[in-house]
Amino acid sequence: MAQKSIVVLGGSPRAHGNSDCFAECFARGVAAGGGSVQLVHMRAFHVQPCTGCHACVQLPKHACVLGGQDDAEQLFALVQQAPLVLIVSPIYFYALPAGLKAFVDRAQRFWAGGAAQGTGLPLWAGFIAGRPRGEKLFAGSELCLRYFAAALGRQLTETLPCKGYDAQHDLQQDTLQCAAIEAWGRKAAATAQAVLAGSCSA
Image (cartoon, rainbow, N blue to C red; front, side):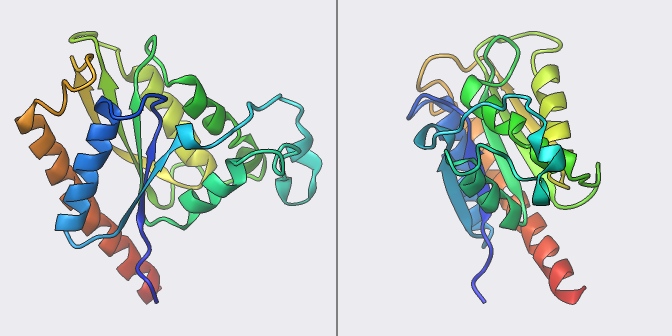
């Protein structure tokens, strides 16, 4: 059986910036740790925003009426099979960017299905902020992703916030921070391997 990959979901609408650098450093760490990783960028997919119609409460399997009209279900399928998911996102006005937030909101159908909160497979989050300071700079995004994870039956277990990376290549030039992200990727590979071993022995 092929090894299931860690999925890295990049939320930045800008290519080749700090969020992409974070994702690539993490992926190198996963590979160095013997893991498999799949990089997925939200900007390459079309996801319509949730309209709050509540149809998913009543429809069979809590399906979304928008499901056949965009790429949301394809992305959810990738996320659901992964032993570990990392979401990498820039911070815009103390929150997640619009494209990623639209995907988060579409998880309403899983929430309607009653997924167990605070249990299940790990979801990690890496945040990139241009501001060098701000006591609650990441608080709103972290809370948002905590409940997103819960809707999917996952648990937000680790975060790595990075401040002060604004210009396009700022993170790339910080070799110490890049090394720390790679080390985090190696840790993720070990975590994913433990998850897969646990599921195989269950």
